[in-house]
Length: 151
Length: 317
Image (spheres, rainbow over the protein chains, first blue to last red):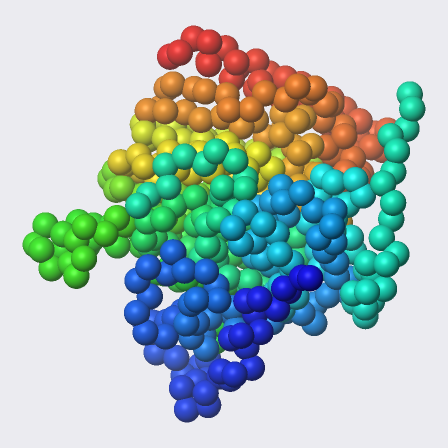
């Protein structure tokens, strides 16, 4: 249903930081260039994350998942693809392809909750759950649509 | 193939991020929202330099970099100088015909925090603006030196408590007013100067595109809510920025060629500044009876500023 591993998993784990390539931070020469990509980086702007060849130095290959206490869970059934979460996600963790929201990149999400706050649907299509909540458990307990309070 | 107009958010979301995740900015930091938006609003090659500050130290923690473009790490004060140099060299090499791909469009951008823009890098920025290099300087204004523990900067507004302007029994926090950097930059005669906010993503993207498309030095001051030093919940970043723009604490406007002022966002319901102040821990002390007069003076100042902006917009001078 949700392709949450779309971009992150393909590149991660396979390419560990090579020990021979990596020198200590205090051994780095002044004016050194660190490449974000392996090989030619021309046209990177037209490539989606899964098409790019990230180098070991790109933070895309790192993870900040351990920062999270709570995680956002995405319910595709309620989503209207407004892309509010995409534009305001500070960690580039909302995976959007062809104008559709596909899921959350849990390797880069820090669990700040901005996406949940800016979600305009009723009920929200993104909600925060504690980190160990299973996806099915979270989705099965999704709240119903709330009626507007009568004035 | 430059992106020329952004019609809606769905269309905007088809752009591919060039600012990668797993940088070490705080959860909910507005810095990365602004940087992502700048890099998404253009297809051109970017050369970026960054002053020391939260953005720089968090996006280039060895061995990782979060930048998918050419990015120069430079001292606290001289991002404007570094980007001037890069731009001058680019022009020279273009003239001499030594560029590998002379037709590829390149844009030069410098990022700085408010400490490095308002205070430490002010002279360098002023120099670069005066020399008229073709670059865009973006100030990520979070109103304090957040990277070093929240000291006051000349961008900190009156009444806010910081680690070096503490509120206490004899003090209501910072006593001096915020420097009006937008007017100062407009006075340099810069072709495009603006103040923008990430909650109004469309005006921000359009402002960025205007600045990138304008020949000459452009300056943009962006409001960057700081969850750590403004003391609010990380999830409320956009809410706080909404309050800032709707209370007119941060009016969104642009100044073209140093004189033509356009207001880019007029709140339908202007909210009292108390709501903006009450949402943040750094203004908590102002709600004590002895400091209430500070809130009144802030409100008065905001009203005067808004009146001034509206009149200047009408006058077209």
